[in-house]
Image (tube, rainbow, N blue to C red; front, side, top):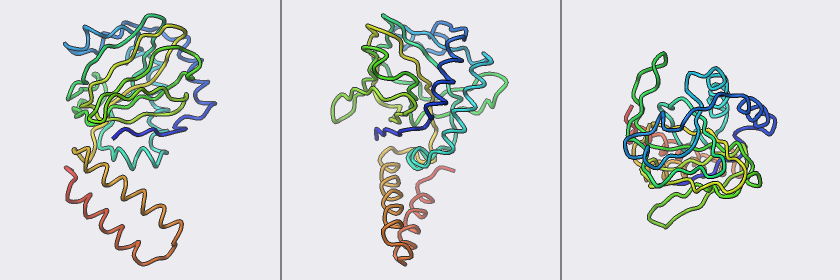
Length: 228
């Protein structure tokens, strides 16, 4: 499931992020690349222990907790601490698949995170740069994604994906991974659709007794499929 989640960060928050990141000490993006991806990764990344990274990471996590769409779609069990990257002119990240398991840095929880879902939170507006599209391949073809600043894309970490070369401007984003309560992408899709339908019916038919039954179906499926 590819899902666009709008307005995770407000315009004011995006402006704060950009101001703070403009004064950050960036490093080579290879610092978190695996054996395969290090060969095709050409960007800059904020070190995880950079004070600005810790500050902004907390804001991202708080914003995720306020996003009902993100929570309903991802059903997060663990979230890898958000990271930040920057693509200047000529930078790119070739086709790759994310590592299946990630370990947070020392000093934070060392619980491994199974990467069920990849997340990109855009911090640059589309008109600020040319190129830099996120290309994601699945059974329906290749999807080209370039979202407004403050919006988020959620997609399966099993997908082959890449970031095309920047030809003008700069692309800044936060990226991270989610271990879901539901390992299966297909089952997460069913639960998200059911949850969305229940919410819409609740608004259209408040107090309808069948909503209780449908809500029970949702929770029974969640109980059956979750790996808690």
